[in-house]
Length: 520
Image (cartoon, rainbow, N blue to C red; front, top):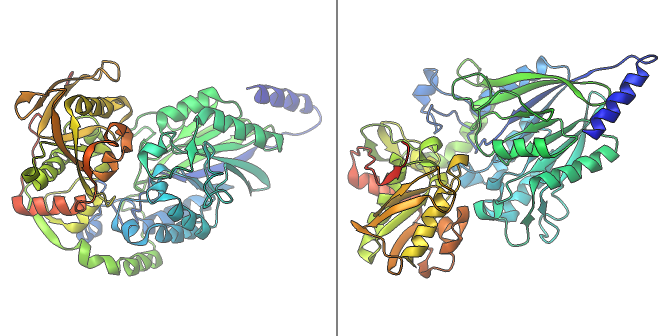
């Protein structure tokens, strides 16, 4: 705020002899793309070719290329930036890791991106390979990477780019709990986002940069906290919570959301929208206007033929896998994040039941799956392996272990601790039922826990099945890291789900009340 007041005062003092020169910038932005290079359905999963031809699909890199070109053509000055999580979510990432992502981001001409937690899914090595391949800065301010040789000389906290003769500062931000959400390794440590951003703002301001944009993969609530707790930030381009801002149905707030003079924007996920924020700065770098909207990338946006051909070429090695029909479902199996991170969802119950069925003969009584590991729904009709892999893209393996009843209750409390934030730790379960009251403080929300029709015994030992990510402490499940008789090397969870669906085909989705949410 001091910077803005002094700058404005100086600018006013100069108006008698100097004309003010406004600077206009169009900020084009994406976030949480998750390698959705092909169009997506209304359920955010890969859209069938006939549905795409019928105009029922959204996004896809071939459409995004067209949309970005059109937006640039109508802008005086423009940049294209990303709020993180380009990685993970389809077979394209499973097969190509970051190389295909880098190719298309270079083609689109991105000017910068922040590191999302999923950029660390395969450790620093894959992230470094991606950074070596791209032609723009990849940033992360709230982490110390000095002890990680693969990143220490490469991953910067901020960068300065130039557009239309003006310097623009970019600062990266990633979730503070990325060590729980992904696999950054023990050499990377994360820190408070507010302090990290302010430190970079101060550095950039000292260098004479007065237009500063934070590329934040930290979620809508954290973005608002950063805006409120810092001075000198002009725009925050968000990600992580798949937040849609605007005046359309389903939007969580206005576009932009203004907090402490900072314009916060976010454009949902999966390439369904391209964010377009038009900002005007005065000579002092103070925003005088900020307006825009996320542009829906629907069938009205023409697909670029060259990009379509390249995607088809890259898809050839995947076709045999993705087109294999494994089952049939009578109706849509709902796996949307709004459900699976807040209450029992049909996909969550299905996955948990599939896990439990796979190891029931080993004396396992309880299955637990993090809701954030469920990435899509499956529509009615034939179910292909490609659809299953879109739902469960992380190549997690089945893990079995033993914990006491009190540890299991602590795990459920962890799962319910961030419901209001839509956190991925929310537990989808089988073999166990419970009640959760989100109005109570975190750590006191779980009650009426039943296993096999009897109240859970805090002192008894229970056999549990989950995925290796949760068993090793992901999503806050640190209480499982030292579990007894742990075995993390079972089959791929996607294969377990496909085989269970095949055994149940034709499958009828269900929820059966295993999770009761007070107030619903």
